[in-house]
Length: 343
Image (cartoon, rainbow, N blue to C red; front, side, top):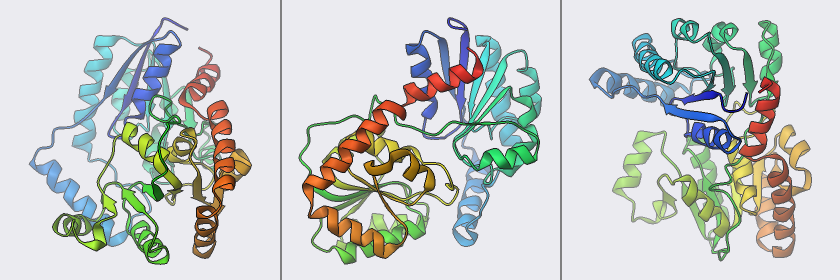
């Protein structure tokens, strides 16, 4: 199916569609990428604020869906792109932003969804999966969940984008680095790491879920409490930071039961040492190329050990790098997707 048209679509999800589209073009496919958005009018801003405050208070286990008018607006915009481009296939990242009516109008094309989040967080999406020709999930336990609804799916793990995550010659001048969303439980753990390792050079980057915490950071950004905490970074900046760190921390969200976030592979792709929370998929896949912890005391023990054992730390990072560049880059994942779809 090379030289046919493929439309790659996402909505506000870390722009992974760009990596997918890039790899497809490299493999000879005529590809267009669309990141759909809705206007940030007053009612959208009010709704977004209510959702964020509610999530801060109640810690929802499932994602709060977009409102019907928001999905309708996005679907209408996407249909215009679809009709103008006339693709043979459409690849959706997550697909929580398009309605069934729009999907039905696209059925003349092959429809593919790569769910880069767990369906346990988006149970309302399951009802429309019959519209897709191929379903890929990043969380392997979702396969059993979808089978209960009589949908077949394929495990397609997340991965690293080689355009941004690769080894760099940098001085390892950061002892402990974390990049990711500042969820309250993560903030608490990172604060305890600061207390446990007061002499370590610690750097934290990411966006703040809790707006009160964000306001505090803005007001007290020059205080000792926030001197190690910074804002968001681009993928290229993240790759450079990983290359400067002796230890890179990776803390998964609650939806990862048997699957890994992209950061797992992005860190290793820079040939940097990683400590991550335990996950059976990571243990089986990366073996001795990563350090895993099951509880806080074990995390502290791993940090303390590897800060003082440079040669061992670099050896683990080297093994993790080899595993990753061979098996866990976007170019490899797109090969798997192409093969499964029969393109």
